[in-house]
Length: 111
Length: 109
Image (cartoon, rainbow over all chains, first blue to last red; front, side, top):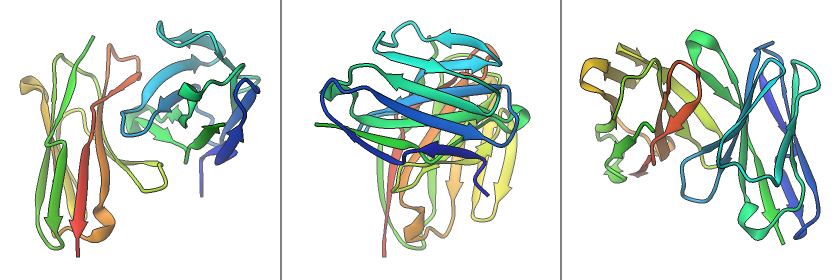
């Protein structure tokens, strides 16, 4: 059974049109992460939540925002997507001694 | 920041062959994970292995933390083993994984 669920799996948007990606988890883990992975590159951490505490990476563009209304859900908002934001967006939770556990990802295309 | 280097960057093998993938890291780490990224992009957790040796079927991994490297072994490769294998380490115990650039493994029938 999927424990980290991302929606949508595929998102096509137009240049500058806001997008929201969602992530939900059934594990009740207190840490959730958003990673960005561009083609043929390694995943790059955008930000993470420890409970409600938001931790932004220093080089994450202001165009990216996140919300975590409760333990189970986390959202990634891209306010004005550019062509360079086309990527796979990966959500993960912290399993503690088991490490990070990733969802299936949301692939964003910007036209 | 911590550096994570994986080798080789690309590996092409015939079905049935064995392979060894290497991950070097530049500083002490609390945790290390190996992932397989499938063709649809999902990162599948293979091993959580900050030290020692673990085995899961045809796959095994060894981390020598004092020497700052980890190895992933794949025996009797199958075409379904193809994909990109990532090593990732956490920094300062914060569970913020830093990824290597990956090894792209291609298994030909």
